[in-house]
Image 1 (cartoon, rainbow, N blue to C red):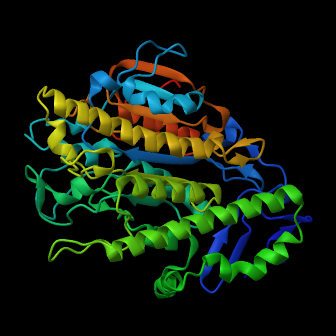
Image 2 (image 1 turned 90 degrees about the horizontal axis):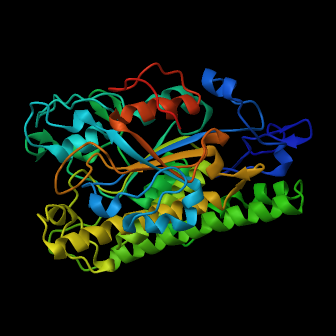
Image 3 (image 1 turned 60 degrees about the horizontal axis):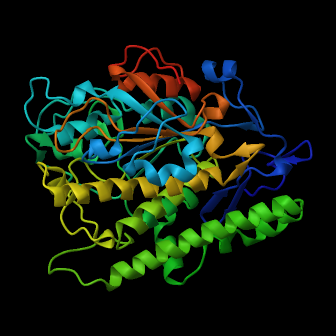
Length: 459
C-alpha cells in the first residue's frame, strides 16, 4: 500500500503517509499538505490522550554516558539564566538556549546499599529504572522496568516502532562483568521488565534497516548496499506521484529529507567498507558496519535517531554512548588509554586532562545532535521544540564513584511546557526518578510514581 487513496483525507495528506516499495517503508516528515501541526494541550497531554490528526507528538530520548565525569570541570557556576557554562559544557554554547543543566539529582539505587563493589554495573542498570539490581553473575537477574519502556507501553502503539534502542558498544552477553554483577547489567539501560533487557542496535546497518526496511529484508538490504543502491530507489514511483501533490516548500522539504536518508545510507556503506578493509589481530572479528572511530559511530547513530523522530517512526528512544565501565579508547582525539582506566586517575594530572577531553568529546557529539534537532523545522517551530532529550551518567565523579549530584543535561522545550537556557539546581538527594515522573507526564503518560521517586520536579 502506498500513500495513494488510503492516505488522503479532506484533500490533505494523512500525517502518517508512508512510502512503500519492495520491503522498504519510509514515513515522511511533516509537510504543509498534511494540514496544521499544533502542540498538544496540557490537558490532553496530562491525560495521555492519543494524538489527533495534525497534532505534534512528544518525543523522549535518554542518552547514557559511562564512567561519570571530572566533576570539578563539569559543574557550572551560577543558577537560572545567568549560569556560566563550565569547560566541559562549553560545546553547548551554540545550543545553550535549548538546554537546561540540572544539578542535585541522585541515583540512590546505584549505591552499594549493602551489596559491595560494582558501581559501574549498577550505574547503567539503575540509570533508567531507579531500582536496585540483584547482585548475581547468573541468569537470576532482577532490576525493573526502565522509564523508556514505561513510556513505550503507553505511547508506542501510535508509531511503527514502540521504541528504539541504540548503542556504540555491545558489551559482554554472559558471565560476570563487574564485581559479581551479570554482564547484562553493564550492557543495558533499557529493560522491558525486571529480568528482560531490550537489546540495543550497535551496527548502523541494522539500525538503518529497522528504521527504513522490513526486518525480513535483511538479505536484500545487504545486497542493495553492495550494489550501491538506495532504499529510496525502491520508493521512486511513490515519490514522483507524491511530488505532484505538493507545493514548492513541501517539495523542497521532501528533497532535503531524501538527501538526509541518502547521506546516512552512504555513511553506513562507507563504514561497512572500512570495516572490511581494516587489519585486525588474528582471531578478532569486527562487527559489520561499525565505523572505525567513535566520532563517526556516535554521529551516525544520532543522525538516525533524528530521522526516527522526524518521521514519527518512534517517539521513545535510548542511546548508550558506551557500556557501564566502558574502557574504549579515543585515538581520534589523541587518547590511547581506556576511558575506565583513566577515570581512576587519583589526581594524576595527565590522566585528569584526558578525562576532561573525553567529557568534552561526548558533549560535542551531543551538542551537534541537539543542534540538528533545532535546525529541523516542524509546524510553526522545530523538531527539538517537541522533544525532551536527557543526557547523563549514573556516576557523578568517575574517580569517586559517587551517585549524588549527577551530571544531567535536558534539551528541548517539551511542546512549550519547559523554559530552557537555565541551570536548574534541585535540593541535594533529589531522586533522578522524580525527573522521570515529570518527563513521563509531559509525554502524555499516566504515572503516579516511578522507580524510587518521591514526586515530580518543577521545570
